[in-house]
Length: 454
Image (cartoon, rainbow, N blue to C red; front, side, top):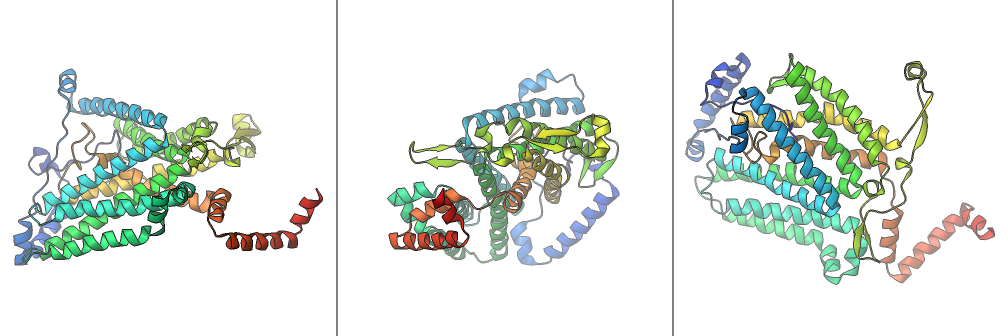
């Protein structure tokens, strides 16, 4: 997710600011021109691309804000526009959290579709591919296929009881992967049939562009859904840490920034980077402490057969129960305490906030490099002062992968409820075989005998 308050570098070859490029930018531009010249020697490449035209985008700031802030300098006007829209987005974020996990899942899917649209549109503009037969249709068809596969896997994994209870869902679940593969093969064959002479290379460029976009956008949004089903806290805390880091890095950089951080984003500073890190770690600890006390945030999303609804009610695990920790001797004299009571999840939140502060911004740097490569300011102009949806979620996708890997590596263990659900779907003879095997195992360990004596 790009900074709600970040100032991405603007490279518009048609504006006067383009004259102030650094020596590094000029050298990079020259090397790119040489590469373009070499590529242009291929006559097929010339006819397909017609040059590498920039794709200019601009923010549509509401007229009411333009009038209200007309007396301010462009720097402060941009600060206020970004700030007001950031507050609006945070308010919307609170509203969808209140509406529950199913609404959150729907919002994630909507964001995914919009991000896909923005990236694919850039490909169409850059490669002048609007007239390619079927290609716009095929891009969205592949998006549908991949979503069908991932969401089907998720529903089967997390709501096994519901799937097995409904006959149509049970059939779809049983043959899910075969159906998904058949759908993809259909799209693949349609692509081959759509190949047109003199446009082969361009069509394969766009085929690859579509699949890389699917890998980045759909796969990561699928991981976000998995994190959400583990408990809303695994969804809210990482996202909030990225948002906090974006805002605080911008604030520290805006008021104290002096030292450039990276050439891909000249307005990012070391002062903002370091200030954002400490502010995010503190924010993560406080937010985790507040949320760990509420079951609606800590419990995984499950399907209740009795009420035929999705629930987030459970007995909190040890991760969300207050425990007492000894403070290191070095710090005892400073804080005046020997012990501190905190939730174990708060310790994990330090890892999450650290990643959001130190590694998460590289998702934004990657997006900046992508935009510079195609000479655009933003992915779109959906949000005034902020750019497109993808500009706001470039770091979130990287964070989602880390959280999913972190849960699988350090948090998640065998789930008894899922094992029981699968056990009940077996044939009676299979259930009896597992029962006898488990009974023999418990007798050998001496556990079953002690239970019977009790």
